[in-house]
Image 1 (cartoon, rainbow, N blue to C red):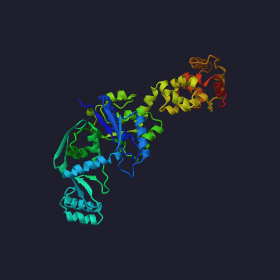
Image 2 (tube, one colour):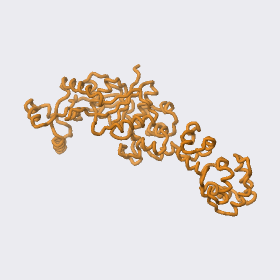
Image 3 (cartoon, rainbow, N blue to C red):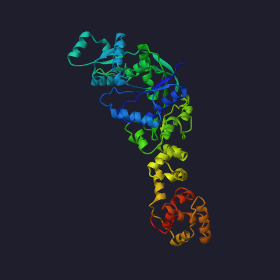
Image 4 (tube, rainbow, N blue to C red):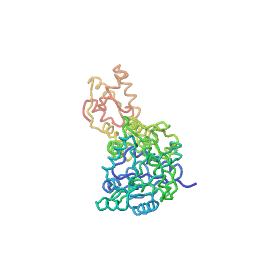
Length: 448
């Protein structure tokens, strides 16, 4: 059995977003599960919009997701191969020059629609004489080149959609070469897939119609036709399609907002499948859950609120060894960092939120004193050292006996005095970190 080779081929014309993460991860995890290889191929033939900044960002974003490509290629470095393919298709009579302007094509489509006809290209260029082509050239017109489709039904067994087909008689002959001689997406994609030995093309369902066209080009160029899988697309909770203009859902912005890559991985892969959306901490575990046949045909709704939930699940279960360096970067004292993490992590949605709880521990905090008399009695009962995990229980028992306060009336005034907040981690763990000296000052109403 041939070792699977899959590819992810983004255009470096903007930052990757959560919708791009889905095909990238599905391809990478499919290869990981099948013992195959993953090719990152930059579709950078659009010279005006492609930039090195965006190309570098793609590498960074994929690395953040945990994706390490086995192979890398740039289409801008393979233009000679596309020229060879162009000549081969032209020699077969499958690629032909067209001289219509966009305005002329638009008027023609409108006339066809007005007559109740499908707005597909009528192949008028096939009837041009040598003289007519020369006249267009004399006018300064440069041709674009179309691939002549066989008017047949192309069928394939899709790993997501099952038996699939495209009736190519209902399609316009696609433009493969622009007027300036550069190739559009379709031709480089087929040439690269064929020459690089891509075995599986896993991509969004918006490419289904392209598959009918590309199969014919694969066959015309003598390449093996790969296996196709067209997955559903991620859309927003409001039903809007994802695009690069939704900056808040770019992988870069999600990273800067403090989300864990595993949270993004989990949602990008599991949303819109028969698997329950949940936190999956490792790519190996996530790869075991990837079954292309269990992807829904309905659009997959991405809800940022779910990302918050999944991210919190990961943080709550995160071992100290994984959080250590980030905690130290936040200013947490190394000698108490592990205990601190154990105490606060269940109250965090993101690791960065630990900085606020470290401020509560180390100060300064402005205490909230609801009842000065109660606080004074509590202060008088505060135990001496050792100031440890048992202190909170023994102290609150003594305060309860002295004041008669219990439940919320006992615990909330103490929490407000010690932390200035009405919520937070268990004070049994937090109090030893705050320490006796700061506790004394806060119970006395001093900022500490």
